[in-house]
Amino acid sequence: MNWKTHIKLTLPKLSSACHYTGSMKHWSNLTLKMISHAYFHSTVAYGVTFWGNSMDINKVLLLHKEVIRIMMGISPISTRIFTVPL
Image (cartoon, rainbow, N blue to C red; front, side, top):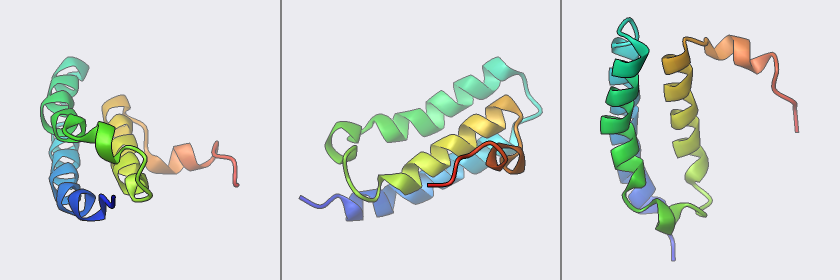
């Protein structure tokens, strides 16, 4: 079974949730956590057990990392310094 189409339709929703979280980054951490849970987590949780092992999951995980970076106040450039090349 291929979940590529479902992930392709889900990515714009997750991208807008990431953008919304980023536009609210000046709010408190608790508020950001609630926004992230309401917009991002609710979309990802729907069907993750089915498409969690799909080959296209990397795009979803990258958006999830971006939301976490926004919530923690970490720039994407500073996290690239500590990544280990494969």
